[in-house]
Amino acid sequence: MKASLLIALLAFVSASANAAGGAAPQKAEVCAACHGADFNTPVSEDIPRLAGQYEDYLARALADYKLGTRKNALMSGQTEGLSAQDIEELAAYISGLPGDLKIIPLHRFVR
Ligand code: HEC
Image (cartoon, rainbow, N blue to C red):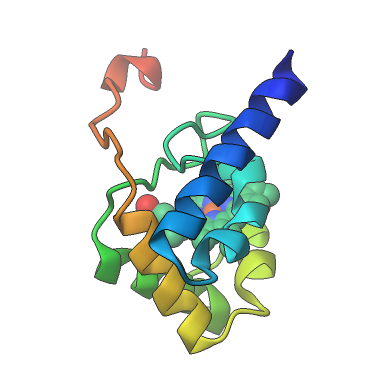
């Protein structure tokens, strides 16, 4: 059930990939394991929602992870192999996805 949902989401992503053109959706497939195929359904609470985030914010975050000016064990590995063009394409793609960025109620973290 869970696997078929993931496959459906991946199929959706590649469908929108073809519609949008470009290689970004393919490059983004690896990100789906954590951020969700739609970048709006992360697999756990400590992974951020990204769909609809400002493009320049996303590009800056990815560049910072790559350069080591922002440190995170998971994201450093993810950005190591990305070129500047990859980063720009990923940022534009993710920014264009429909998302519901919102403040997560504080009481979920602070009791
Ligand atoms: C193994 C899980 C994992 C994978 C795969 C992954 N991420 Fe992340 N990502 C995270 C986590 C965890 C964070 C939060 C890290 C932090 O606190 O700095 C994050 C943070 C980010 C941020 C910063 C968000 C913000 O609000 O500052 C961006 C942008 C991002 N990821 C993009 C991507 C892209 C693009 C890919 C694929 C190339 C990807 N991630 C793959 C786990 C992952």
